[in-house]
Length: 138
Picture 1 (cartoon, helix red, strand yellow):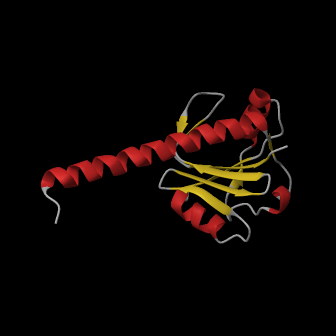
Picture 2 (cartoon, one colour):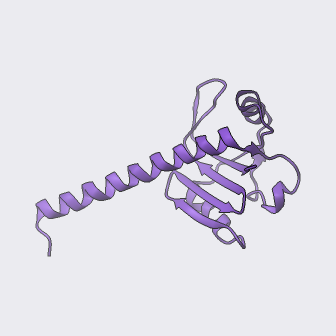
């Protein structure tokens, strides 16, 4: 058995690891957005859109203007874990990060990011629903 001090150290390390993963995911998301083209279109390069997610034209336009790229953003009220479970079942997708606030998947040059909360880049407002982005890298 662990004593109280050991348990506290373990809990602190676990929390630090969660924070590092979340920070890494956000960094990867920014790099992907800056280096790639966020896709639009009915097939999203063969990657299905999460059922019930709705296309967010305003957010897509903001991303397009800020990043000078095509953009498609989808929103859902379902949590990241539920959305991540859907993408984990998709053939050929590799999961890199999947926790309660962030998830990232990859298939070849295609990245799928899922996050909550997320910031509206145009207004700076934090949103509590889930944002899904599908990105095709050059």
